[in-house]
Every structure is written in C-alpha cells, then in structure tokens.
Image (cartoon, rainbow, N blue to C red):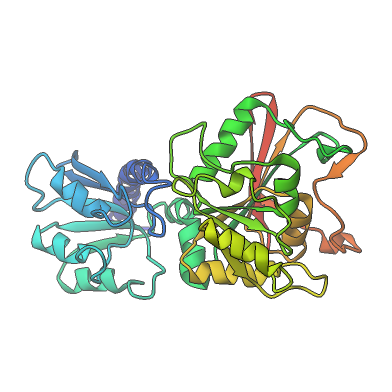
Length: 378
C-alpha cells in the first residue's frame, strides 16, 4: 500500500466516523415520531455545515412535513453548501407533501448522506438518482442496519402489503398465562403493564381472541402512557362476546372491529352494526376458526401496517404454528403457577429441527419481570 493509499483510507475511515456520529443523531430524532407517523416511516434529518449542526428535524405526524423540510425550516443559518444526514432516502414523488429531493436541490445542499434506500417502489433509489444526476454527492448505507430496524414495520408492509405482527404475552416462570381457574390479573408487574401500554401506542392495531374478552374483559386502550389508541380487533368466530364488553365501548376514542365468520348470528351482527362496530367476515379454517392469514391480508389491504397480539393461548399458538409472527415479546414474572393455562399449545413440532428460533434477542427488566424481546426466525 502506497503512502497516498494509506492517507485515502485514513480519510475515508475518519469521514465514516463523522457520518455515523451525525446519523446516530438523526436516528434519535426519527424515534420521536414513533406512534404518530404510521403508515409512513419514521425519519430524522440533521444538517451540518463547517462541522456544526445548523438544523434538525423529524417526521412528526402522518400528513405533516417530512424530516428534511423540518430540518431546513429549523436551520439557524443558510443551508447552502451544507451536508444533510437522513435516515431514509428522500422521497421523489408527490404525495401529501412535495418531493423532498426538489427541496434539497432548491436549497443548494452540497452533500446528502442516506441511512438506507426507501423500499417503496415509487421511491426505491429514484430520489438518490435524481440528486446524483444534478451533481449532488450522495453517500448511502451509513448505519444501514439501525436505520432499517427503526422502520422494520414499514419495510415489511411496503414490501409484502402484510402487517408486521408482534406477539406479546406475560407468563409465569413455568410458562402459564393464567391459573387453572382462568384468573390472569395480574401475571406481570404494574411496571410491565405500563410497558405493554407503550407497546400498544406504537402499533396500528391490537388483537385478542374472544376468550380473552370473556375472561378478562379488557378495554385495550392507552391509559398508562400518552399516545394514540390502536384499532381494537377481536377474533370471535361466533360473536360470543357480550354486548356490554369494555372493548365495545368508547368508540370515539378507539375503534373496534370484530373478525368473525359466516356462522356468526345475523341478529348479533345487526346489533353490533347499530353500535358502530364493524363485523369483518373472514374465511374460516377446517376447524371452523377465523383464518388469521386471510384476516391479516385483509387488514393489510386496509392500510394497517402493524398489529400487536396480546392473546389468548389459542391465538398465540395459531400465530406461532403458522409462523405468522415477526417479533416476540414475553414478560416473564418471578412466579410459579403450577397447573394453569399454557402460553403456547401444541405446535405440531416433532423434532428439534422444526422448533421455532428467537433471534436478535435482548433482555431487560421492567419492575420484577424479565422481558425477552426478539425476532422470530423465518
């Protein structure tokens, strides 16, 4: 390696460190949009000039200005000749807002650093190509894994039109989600419950089975944290839940939808319709249950990008058996129930090669409970 080559490598390495520093700031900004921008992705932007941050912004709410626009508006001085760091490729099409690439060009920004390409077919590299054709220097892939993980729900939905499925439940040390009597209040600690409410606020919808409504009568809203209530979905193949269930109340604050089948009582369907509750009829499985894969596909067509499943055992088992979950979150309480309701039933696994693996795991504490979070290996 020549002296010049060594200098070039050192310069490139130094530039990468600088780029990663500012991209990490952009990622932190992007996270502020969590729970507010769906079905759009979370995006953060940082504008740097002469080694100083002169502007910052993030996508704050769906339909609002994009991160790049907010960063330019917030700039403390002219952005001409600066570098802008963006966690996701700037858009090049007209949507609810004008194309961000046009704004970047109009303000004569010199360099654009992008975390990851936008998988949306109407963008997908077009924004970068426009910038490069106009002589803008573009660097791609800075902290790409972190930028993709930030918007894993958006990436799955935009590429498959299927919602990102998070499976969450609380269990005892011996794997029970309820006592033999059906009592399940409360398996986890109050701190874990608050964590669960925060999870709800970051998903478009929350889903439970009819059994959970019958046994626990949950409200399925955001009460312990600030945020937007998800759409409440109850899987009830025969419309068994009572008309005075909590999940059917407060429709102005949180909409409820019931996924059922043609075997549901027409009179109860009519009664629910008068309560402004939509009954979504879905094909059933050979076991006469709602076909969850068909349900998720329909919800995706309706623009629901992410679903948090909170039980019960039949739903948990079915989702795992069909490998429909993307992420698993388990709150493990330091309690032993003995005989009780198992969190996961028979998955039809006959050998160790068929077991479900949880990867990219992390563990953390919430109150007395240990939380396991990871991805389901496909």
